[in-house]
Image (cartoon, rainbow, N blue to C red):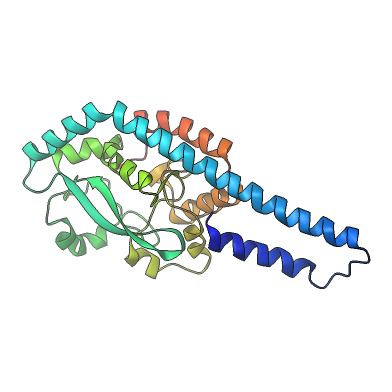
Length: 242
């Protein structure tokens, strides 16, 4: 939660009380104390979430360094093209940033997408195919076990993403969002989230959005810990990933 969001929420709280009459200095002081306490709690929650992101992302990069190195070699041997894939995504409040992934598709994947739109197996503005012909041999496995997402730990360290949050959409998808779907952009995007531990690509887009909005409304340190722990079996089993 940044300064702008804190200011907006404080303004909403003030709007609730602005028409109420306070008959004593004690009542006015109580309101001021409530506002100060709320801001301090929000600041603390923001700092704790950021600390969790930095610590876990740093440790994960260290622990998975052999996997990262081995994946890079396999991608290079499997098909021509770069090891990493960089794409513009939409972050909190519509801020664009580059997301990093291991390349899991052939280099002409974007050019071939238009010809495959009729075979899209997802609803809403997203595109998903279980047997997408653009995916490389190595890409099939690194996507199934989410190894392709490991470079996004760098996005977390840069503060562009969090470990837990809604998945960052591409600008084209956001352009097709309905009003309520824009609520997904009210939080820093994450590597994992309620959608990832609740079925991943097997979910319809409406349920996906509902889970993201639920997370945003309920997010807390312990909620993030719970989702991170549930992510481990979801990744190992590879259910709903393609």
